[in-house]
Image 1: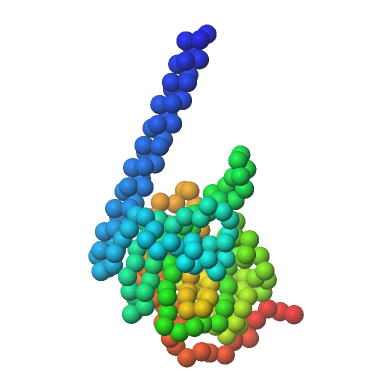
Image 2 (image 1 turned 180 degrees about the horizontal axis):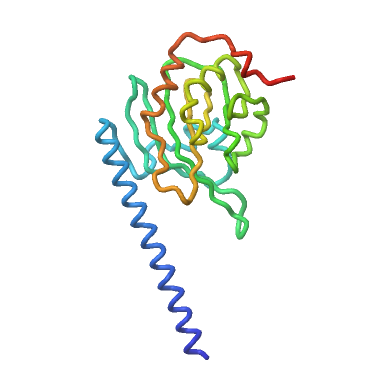
Length: 217
């Protein structure tokens, strides 16, 4: 009986070791792929977080979504002259056996002018951060709060990303795009270039709100 228990424990340890080894190998391959992509675009890459992302962007609802926030696999450089950073981000909800980890792929652009505050959180994000709950107006596939004219412009620019469940937020001189990560997905990264159309919309003249997109009374 004792031999059987020892053998079972040994198999469990071996299986756990194998799982962690495979996970580490996948993470290493992903980091290398992201580094090649960054260098090919004339940008830099760091496996660790050189910007203290959770603190730097603490005013965004995603950063305040839970506890133990962490950013890694950070690509950084410039897009259309604006500093941009793309990274993997995770935070935790709950503690102990009730703890859940949530993952996002994120791009942040730091602009040269201040923007009205806007939040567009995708309605198909199955576990949005708690701060997104007060976005109650509807704008396409997003729950919205904030400046209506800018929200309409951003929603139009980001429409091609809507099927990927991308959410947006502007605060001060910063724009954030966030894509929730599902375990089954392999290449889940938001590319820095995908922020280009949104940045173009921010530099274009502001349009009047589209009455068709306004919430019905």
